[in-house]
Length: 269
Ligand SMILES: CC(C)(COP(=O)(O)OP(=O)(O)OC[C@H]1O[C@@H](n2cnc3c(N)ncnc32)[C@H](O)[C@@H]1OP(=O)(O)O)[C@@H](O)C(=O)NCCC(=O)NCCS
Image (cartoon, rainbow, N blue to C red; front, top):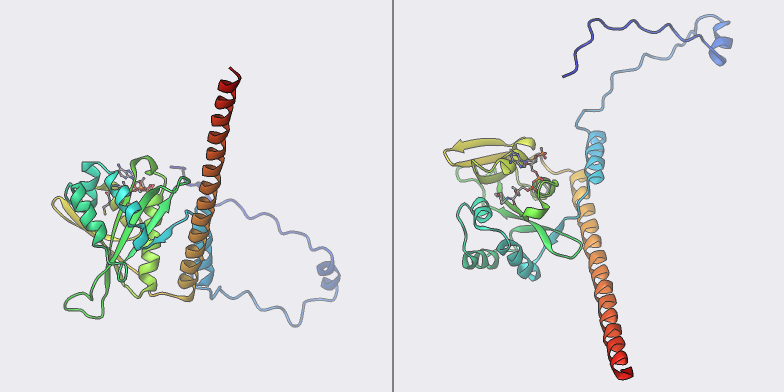
């Protein structure tokens, strides 16, 4: 840790007045001096801070796409690619292939939200499920959503889990949800680290932990941010799909060419 300086350095000598200041100072003091600068009235969490936070998020932008029923096959492939330990961390038990199918087919897309991140080959490398619950029993004014996530091992440690969490929190906030809930095993340090870094309160109960993140009410800025991210995520997916079509076309042309080359050689021989 850098050491604190022993004393505050002396203020630099005042800059000599130049230009208009010098000319005007010959007429004596200003009878109507400008009022001293008032302390900034911009709250630290005002629109400027929101815009700055949004820009920071865009600088580390990862295309996240909202998934629909038609993506179920990709979701199942993603979940089946996880080994027994990861399935245990994700679901709280080492889900069998059959249980994974059942889980994916049971997602209610009309109520919940599913978010995904695709790589260039359109493989689903990260998947998050935001399950919207009923109002909290005993307190109908409070609403909660549960967050569950998985990132394929080769794509971990690049912030994808954290970005999905932030996006899920934004979507939940924009739906009027006030608490994001995460149920994780106490040994799941990456997941708990994501939640605590966002400000969640973690309650440990032996091998299991529950994390609660209070969400602020939605705002115009948060709605715009979600709309912008949705459009960019969709654009990115379509771009990757076109690139995939072109790549497949180039591959098939190369295949046909190789076929004709070899049959031409055979005919010559
Ligand atoms: C949990 C999981 C989604 C994290 O995905 P990820 O993309 O690797 O996460 P990130 O890259 O965003 O990193 C998350 C944080 O965990 C930290 N982390 C990673 N491994 C860690 C470890 N072994 N111990 C402590 N912290 C760790 C990272 O440093 C990072 O923190 P930072 O942003 O402050 O640097 C992923 O490990 C996973 O899919 N696990 C299996 C399924 C699962 O556990 N799901 C969660 C239950 S709902």
